[in-house]
Image 1 (cartoon, rainbow, N blue to C red):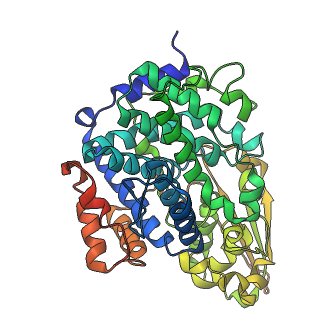
Image 2: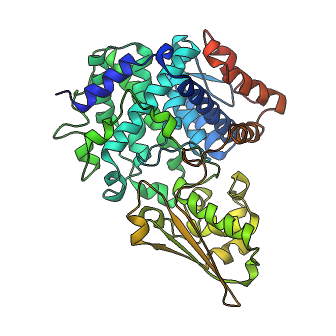
Image 3: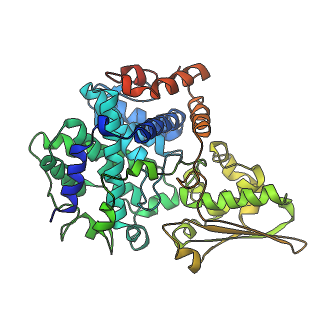
Length: 454
């Protein structure tokens, strides 16, 4: 019987642009543009500026573009920078049942290596599909235990597999070599304890870039005959046993080669941790149906699944911490009717009116809702006013999930809004147009030359 890793490796070796269904190709292009738009906005953030400065001072010279600045670096360093500025905004896509952020784990690595190796848009799309598939399927095998039974930021430690799979595909390795690359990725993968993420310390933003970095390194080292165990994920002393109390490799492989994981991934419409998006949707539904005067609110209860209930700090000290604070997120959604990047700034998280309302929010783990996790990520919001009225709304799956998708127009509007933070509307439209025909490009220079300020 084939090992889990070898089946993944065979998929990566076999996947090719010409055999991909049209919906998969179209989705890959949309995800590439989603990541690019987020990164262009994220470039101007503190994390975006600092990681660009760090790479400029410490990286090797190379051919891969640093988005925003237009500088150049080695592929692994460019992937580190570009994924960091993307992840900072908490707007990158999520596959909920694998607890992965596959776009930011895959796309910066794949684009950087395509530039370094002068590869085509078709090669990029195949690598992106491979990265999504492998990262998500490893996550499925170890979830939900990796998040429930271990104090890990699951997307962080899993991110290396997406980068490694994309890189191995672009290097054209055979199945045996790809299995060795995935074994190396398992060995080099970041551990990512949850504490830094929960408390919002700035290193949080680097973790997806670090996964992309180590994934590329795992593939590059294979060219010098460094390889990991071909049972590095499923072995008795492998990755799965290290990060999860329970795991199911059959679950991870179900439908491989027939179902494409990129089609089962949710797109974020709100600039905060995905675990809290159902609470936002429920809050906004109450606000729309029952215009509640915030000054008349005496109590708000968010009943949710246990993992989401960890985000219960009503007074976030940093923007990053605010993105994981259910009380803050619910309060700002009620007061401003939005949870976009403008709601997560240094000034906003100190707003006394928001903090006063956030202090009235109680976050409670609900056993009934927890039993639905992780197939569903539900929240029930209950708002009680001074006259004794209570308004309630429940959301099981947030906006942007495959079952409740954003439209193509909404996705394009998201891109234009974010890219417009750095480039003109005309240039943003050109990036979108080139991205939507990226399979026609013999190399990526026409696309990546646009991903800079000006």
